Image 1: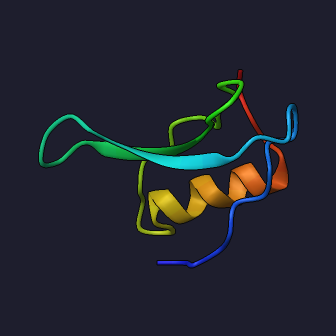
Image 2: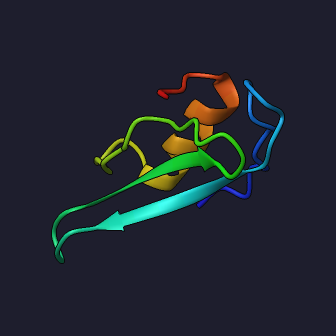
Image 3: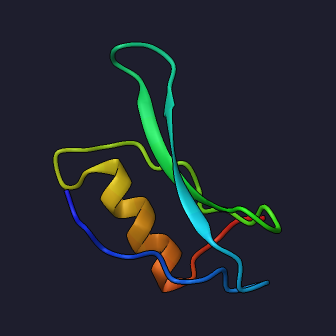
Length: 67
């Protein structure tokens, strides 16, 4: 798992936080959401190529967000 720091929100400058969603033992994913304005990345499901949390942080820091 990466220790990459989240950049400020690209829209309001607020703090982002990682949200882990779990539906059952086999279905889960991660996204990053701004604590101030609610902007967020898409929900990323893990694959054999990447961990969901790391990919969500990468998307947030690249400024690929969904609101």
